[in-house]
Length: 252
Image 1: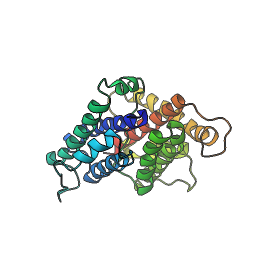
Image 2: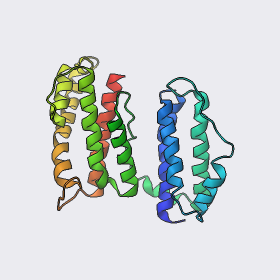
Image 3: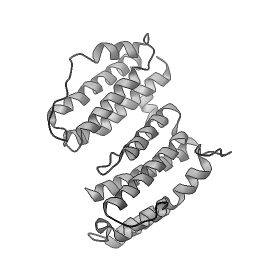
């Protein structure tokens, strides 16, 4: 099987591993799990029908059939069966076409921060996060920096609007993050080692401050002559994901 197909199945297995803890603890929304499962199927359907990977997927996807139940907003233990099924499909494909699992060993050098799934969100933020994941897989991290920038910018705006924090309509990432730090009650300095944590948050603010010029001057959002290399682009994406995870955790 071509290496790009192995990488595709490998990516799906990575995503399943990221989703499993929150699914087991019922912290994952049903719609989030449904979106992920639909994505797995859609991406595997793009494989050539004569590839062994597609044949395995096509045979196993309805063996046995799994159904979505009508219940609450969050998953329960029975919903975990959907992830278990897709893990089995992905592992069966890799066992068949990449028995030494060399692809996963090689990919171990590229550690990524889990894809955020913010509780407080909008369709634009969700779409930008999803687009970033698609671009990383299809074209590389450099092409995805703009999307993760949009996701973070949109999420900061959502937080300000929900908390009725007044900002200008064209506020930058830095301005929005500063407004949240200074005016949102959940981001005030309290708890253990508050001064040290505040120092870390100020360091994060410095990172936020350079995301705008990086996005505007070193990505494909504009016809820039020099673009970020893949390692640096992945660094930017992981930094933005980490900030999204921190903000979401503070708001829960």
